[in-house]
Length: 138
Image (tube, rainbow, N blue to C red; front, top):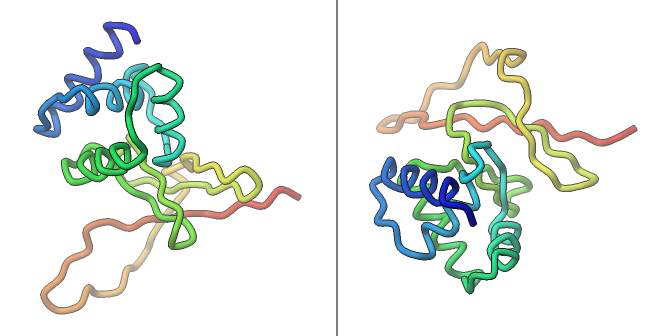
C-alpha cells in the first residue's frame, strides 16, 4: 500500500481521535486511502484486507468498523434489518440499494425532499434519518 494511502488513513484516524494501531491504519487506508467515498460491508473490507497481504481477522474488521462508527468516521446503513453497510461519506444523503447485486450507492441528495418528520418521543431527539431506495432492474 502506498505512503499516500497510509498518510490519508493516519489523518482520517486522527480526525476521529483514534490511535493508529496497525490494524486500524490498514483498514483506514483501504477505506479512504484513494480519497474516494465508499460503501463496504465487514466482509468486503475483510476481503480487501486479505488481498493486501495483511493478516486481520473478520472479528477485528467488525470491531474496527464499530470503533470507526463510534468515532463519527463512518455511518452504518442497515438494509433489511440484517445487512450492514459502512459509508465513509458521513453527511446526510440517501442511498440506492440494488437488489440484484446487493450494492449500496449514493442517490442524488438534491432530488430528495423530506417535508415533515414525526415528533421524537419525549426525552429523545432525531439523530439521523436514513433513506434507502430499493431498486429492481426491469
